[in-house]
Image 1 (tube, rainbow, N blue to C red):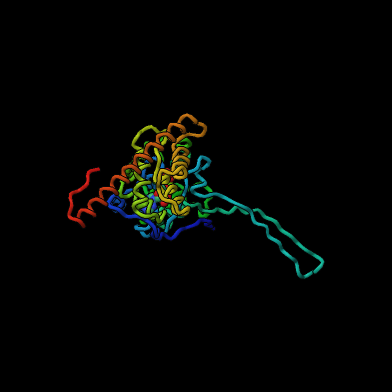
Image 2: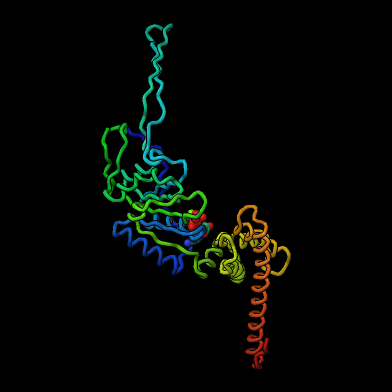
Length: 329
Ligand SMILES: Nc1ncnc2c1ncn2[C@@H]1O[C@H](COP(=O)(O)OP(=O)(O)OP(=O)(O)O)[C@@H](O)[C@H]1O
Ligand SMILES: [Mg+2]
């Protein structure tokens, strides 16, 4: 008998999912690769939207979803299944009330894990950060993706050596670059069986739209925050580039504390705390101080730009009202 202990998710669209031209384009390309029968792999640095896109695309495919998060400790049986537990059977002899007969037998029960369940029923597999698992644990995927056959270990209930992968099965992979801590180099053979789409940080419009959707801050304030974070990223002076998560954290904090971006010490500290920690390794004091100084300059620069833009807007307004020439700033 085969038992399954797997959480299967019903994919639904995220209520605050942002769909800009950039996102639509990636989604469209990825879906066309699925249609052609190929698994898709989103590869990129942290915060480039890989996991969110994988979930979004799974919701477009419309099949139930099984998610696996890559893990250094994984073995093949964590993906495929194994023999778990034992059963105790008690037989109470009711003919002679003074007799209690207990039988204990150990029966190994095969339990399918998530990968087997997805292959068997044709679900969509999201294997998030798959290169965090050791390459040998992922070998099982080679025949699944190529021959659409899954090798089954001896001992799986019905004794069949293979499982034919359901034609509706599809797989989405995500991974971080190899230089990230805890990430293994993916096998060439596995990479060769999927279409890899390299994702970069979001474009300005998408980053601003995501920040606004997540924080509910006004568009003008969101733009200031996003410009500061992008300025820091483009400076190329950080150990790690700040991500959209930095924008979201600053914007959400501003919203909750009912603050607005200004040259105040509080706003400066908020940006410095979030961005210096996000962009430096633990203990790198020198780098943190350098980033903090850079953040201070960027905050001042952005707010000066905003003040100048506001002044021009006001002048234009009063000019149209009085029909007088534009004041120079
Ligand atoms: N299209 C989108 N709409 C709304 N929010 C988004 C979208 N894409 C990404 N996000 C948000 O941006 C943040 C980063 O996205 P995500 O976690 O998908 O990145 P990732 O590339 O998987 O990062 P990591 O490599 O660190 O796992 C999350 O807070 C996520 O909710
Ligand atoms: Mg992720």
